[in-house]
Length: 234
Image (cartoon, rainbow, N blue to C red):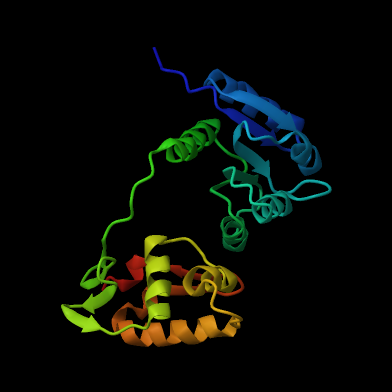
């Protein structure tokens, strides 16, 4: 007999009644507690700390799912969000992830896929926190967090403190897009007023220093920067 889940509460937000019903039926069969809302406005009224996950439609009348998620993140609410949408272009996906979405499922979807994605997100949420590794490596590019140093093919590469912080941030969160504001907050901290353009300058210098691995630092126009280690494999 399959072991049921820990009765986690999930909020389903979709303006299509049939989609709400099929999601509710199948997720309740998996052992989850389900609340439903037919709009982002209603969802914001009923959302509470008990909710472990939000299944959120993007295209709704009134406030869109993207706007709701963006509002939650700006308010400091980190409840995981899985977007459900008929819009499946790369830009839409990047928008969803850039505003703090945890997953993105295009419609029409397989209910089995939705259930699997829900379980995956909740499993990550429940996983015990682990300390980041001391060594980050892509081929022969190696960052040592203990000594705060970078080497490529065994040769030391001198980085400024800010360049090191940017590289560490991107490598520790590979595949995640960071806006210039994010990078300023994380890499500079409280060092007075720094212009967003400064981020581009430092990343240009960093790319020059890491040579063949410069392609690993990917610029998504309009969104920010991410680290893709596959770009360094040649």
